[in-house]
Length: 431
Image (cartoon, rainbow, N blue to C red; front, side, top):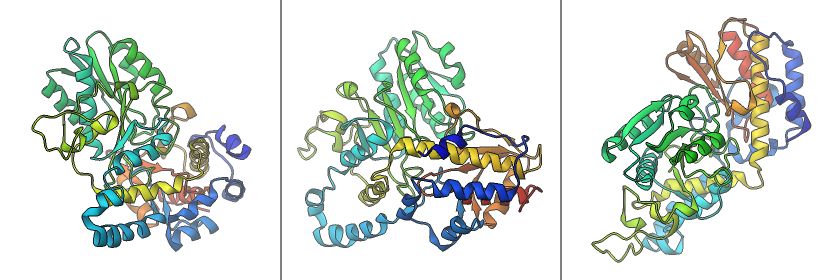
């Protein structure tokens, strides 16, 4: 990342700090955009005329700040899907399982995701939903921990589905579920701990939790660390191998831009794969899937984390979407993410009346993901008006405005324009 990005990223702002006027901020945005080494990656996405105009002229129309819910469409996807439908399915039909590589797609695509989350080859498999993979990972972790460990810890602030599944996994395995805040995990760990399910980035606030430190603490207690990477995969370095994470799951339709309902991924650390005991042993994870044997014998390696027949259309759409990462370093993505969120906070501080919003997202870079969450009492109505004006974020009950920053296709001029529109809806400076 450029020196300009590093310099800007070092000066976060809050809404009560005041700041320069709009002309100065627009000039700064133009300077940052001109120096952006990732600017060319924007061309790999279908963003539309409105988005292009917003980026070029600082207009508000089409500023998409919801990539942390659904990423934009990569240009490589429509043509690839058309070929899959017309030729691979339409002409080759059943032959495509072998001739078009359908059967090996879960591992092949997993190996493409692996570098983005800091994993070596042969440890990531794609398939099923995030929820299903959370269940598979948690139950497998509890089974590896053994019967003498009877407690399952879960992030008390987690995305609701993770909590639901953790509760079910505890019932099914005869463990006690103990919800704890991430900051309380160290004190909650002990000889009873079987596994801990944590979110790398909090979906509401955008807080980045200490994956290396918490993983090490879980290991010292003798438990297994399971991480949900839904809001960090494709947005920041994760370092699964470097930090010894046991199991991890993540969705692919947010910062990986795989499309609505794209299949999730599951990471199983290499040295644990022989012990990985799936609670959903399907024929796709059998050592001889076409042998149709009555007894189950798991395949070697991460293949044993598969379950049933993969969803080929969405899976191959994801594979094509990953082309946008060619030549892109995740370290550069992280640097731009921090620069974008710093700049947005700076614009909010300059434009929005003091006290009108509260910044929920942590300001320190080591504690921030790739989103900015702002709290205000009328957040739901404000977001509706923002979307009507072309600034697309989302609302999280009861009072949070959430803005996701995808560095691959978002620029600084758009960021300033979005802050100006937000200020207008909050009764502040608009020009």
